Image 1 (tube, rainbow over the protein chains, first blue to last red):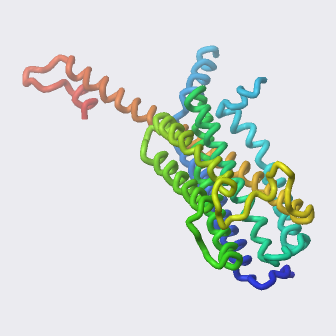
Image 2 (cartoon, rainbow over the protein chains, first blue to last red):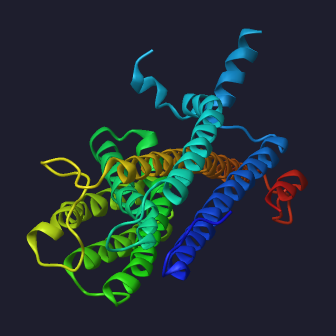
Image 3 (cartoon, rainbow over the protein chains, first blue to last red):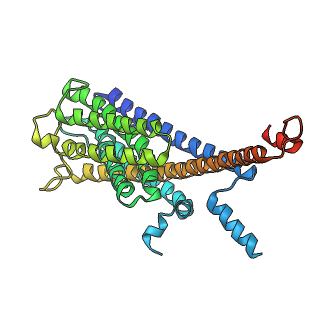
Length: 65
Length: 273
């Protein structure tokens, strides 16, 4: 059920609609960006690349073994 | 564990892994309650009628436009003073979210202004200073994209952000310092809020909901930025490794014994190619 929007319903609906679109777009963009970075990182790790700290940690573990 | 230890990027990722589901849940609950109060429970204004419902999104957008910039300014201090690795990640992640909230503040303000003031826009102090804030956000985003090295970019952006922070008190006090069409502050006032509790509660719940939304989006964007920097570092290591192999091969080729025809021996020539 729609609330009572008085004499200027168009302005109220437009305000909420634009907000919904912009915030929805922002959420979508941030989620897409995170997913893309995660998949690129996974791809690099699959190729055997590691971060310096991770590589150093595994080298230390390896040398201890 | 000290609080500063939590600001380690790896710990931050682990912490936000646990925190984000709760933040998303709290945001959804606060938003549903806030929208219900704003649209169905809060009364109409005696002058503006139902158009006052735009206030429940316009005012939180304005607060968060300034809040996001304040977060960026504090992060900039962290970058310049303590050179903390998460500071410029935080500043960079907050910029597009702050820009979106400032854009929405301007658009909803315009949509509220037309039926109430009879105009979409006036060049008065409050509206103009918020437009300046929006342009500053765009400039900061552009500067982040202009300088490739994130450390150098972070320092340049931090200086620009701190200089631009002068605009925030101008926005806040513009309605007191100059004559404007915009109404003066009605919530954060020395003599207390000037609106009835039935409106104030709805407004504060909406402000809480949008603050939680900002925190959720900010943490999510910071996680992306941390991963982006890891990818950049890994690619640099890969490139350095490849150029290291090439350099070693070149050095070996230059010092290798040559046969009678003056060509390199087979192994070195292969490495060089």
